[in-house]
Length: 168
Length: 328
Image 1 (cartoon, rainbow over the protein chains, first blue to last red):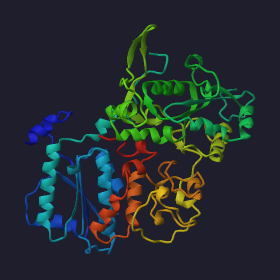
Image 2: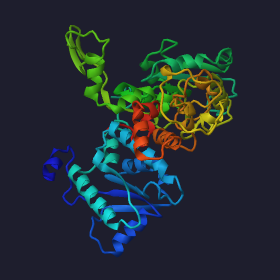
Image 3: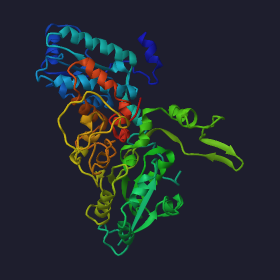
């Protein structure tokens, strides 16, 4: 089924293409959860590049658009469950930012399945592994996002390489 | 003598101004410098200004390279004509200045980057309530008429900034740039305080956000919901954001003197992202989310849902310089 979705994409998908996913994890819960998944030798997709931050409230939405704009095919954000924040209310900011960012990504035509926001505690290694695998498969089905190439095609940074007026 | 970069020469400076994808307000805003216009005329001759004087593109093409000392380019790049003129003016000017928010960050025209070209044409020629077009006419790139074949410029997929097309020496943001700031910039550039050639240096602005210039009081209160400007008469002297109005102040560069806010309207973000901000829209997402009075996800989600068109509101003037720049 995923094959069909890929062929519909205008871009040709390279044969050995693997989704590039950036994961922002909070140090106290989600990163420990990911650590737990590793120590327990759980099997999950190797496509996520993890960036550890001290608190999910520290994940500025700017970082997520930076990831997409620089070629990430998917982005994952994970923090402590509400009520568990090491800094009391850090994740309350995440809780409001992520739905608002999702609305903006939607207006920009970025498929909802490319962005995932989850609460993952230090004890939820299995949830981390399942989330990563599920996100990877969904992004794989969508195909590459290739934002830098798309913007280059539309002239960002170089225009349409025309000659000055009068010289054509 | 004209090669002297100090501008204090006997020979007058040559200045130019061009109008690309913009409303024309920038041309007017240059006149807003008031009596200073006489001082400008004393030190400078107009070499190209289609809005104010009769110049043809061919006149500019006939100039030697770098003939124009300072050229202000207002408006974004929406069509092939605007790109070709940008390249021509770059070649013929010593200093090319992106003037106004459209040239600097895309401005209002770049809001069209949230739609695709068929969608734009559909709205502009068919579905808008004010359209009267019974035959469904649309402009064609090439059309036949009695006099022969007519070709119009290509309509690009996406609105670009001036700096996406040619190197820019200075940028003057704002919609429109505020008169006092404009005069400061003209004095700086024509008076030799800064070199004519530079790279994307912002002039006539401050680094801090509009909140820095705002006279209203911040009471550190959280908000319970959002209102639109027509739905409420805001309390004077109190932060508009804390009153539930979406005010772009926290993410917007100062330089305007908080004009709209002093008039009781929330900041629309027309000076683009402030000094420490790369992406105005997501900076605004951060700011808004920090002041919601919500302790559970459901409440937060409900409040977020009250915001109408977040991308169009938060990127109203800076879509083309945001991280994403356009829709997919």
